[in-house]
Image (cartoon, rainbow, N blue to C red; front, side, top):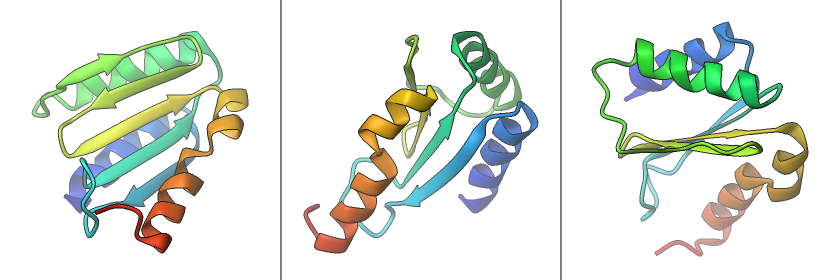
Length: 108
């Protein structure tokens, strides 16, 4: 699993994704083991990130890809990747929410 996470981070980093965060949910009763959150520079950049992930992660099964102008989600089954524009990421603060859920054991 750690190798898969490292590969995803490397792909995102090489394509200039910003502020890449990984939240480990593997010890929680959550629907995925890891959540990766990053910021793109815009819609074209997001599409390029998605294309690169699909191209380089050929052995991975993408269960679903939802791509929007401000927020895109890639579901790998046990890993979810969120790609936000900067403004929306500041509004939703998903990494803070997940850490708060873990801290307060709201997940069961």
